[in-house]
Length: 247
Image (cartoon, rainbow, N blue to C red; front, side, top):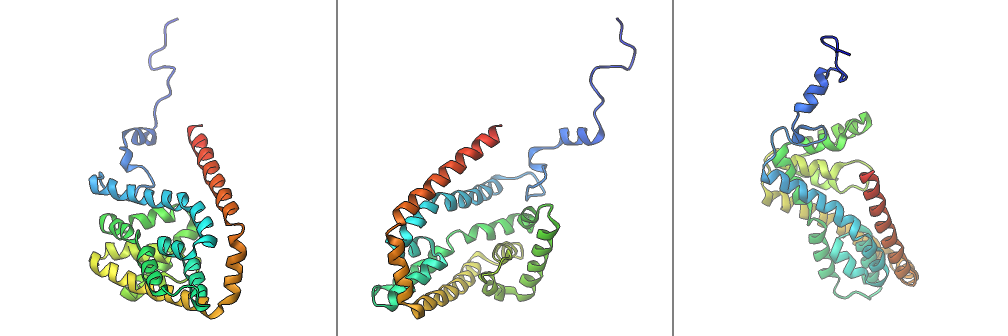
């Protein structure tokens, strides 16, 4: 049977569909850049991925070291809880080299922050738009933090480490790069602010002292099991995510 003129089995493609077909991969929604990415853009995005993988991969190690080698954990990660725990150990005289631990922890805590400064330098507030996504609530929170960061300037680094459920830290870092703050000044402000907050956590642990040490000793007896459990969780979640992506 002859087909009538103008009739085909394939439906005509809409203008939106044609636009999506003509769209390059780097123009897809959720990308932080507004232009074709260069080598530096791809390198920065790779580093952001490395940070995420690093946090997940070291989770079992954190669970194990927190009870068995708290000072090592504090120096490796600069985590607030581990720093407070080392303060408690120092308060009861079990950590005579605590100044070294505190200094190394302050440096370790900011080891990846330069990546978000770099993201701001490359893409402006592009990463903030990616983080906010389509959520109106998230967009409001990010907009509020942006106003604070712009109003405070360098003093914004002090509020970046406030323990509140707002994305203050990444916004301050990205805006630092977007507004032209030099890397040297960024690292200086970041180190001073982070060091001050870690010193407060350390002092808090020192002040509490023996009760925290008792909890650490109790936790040390099960830290191996916690580390193994977290390792199983990490491996299981990775396998599940890979299967989900493949499906």
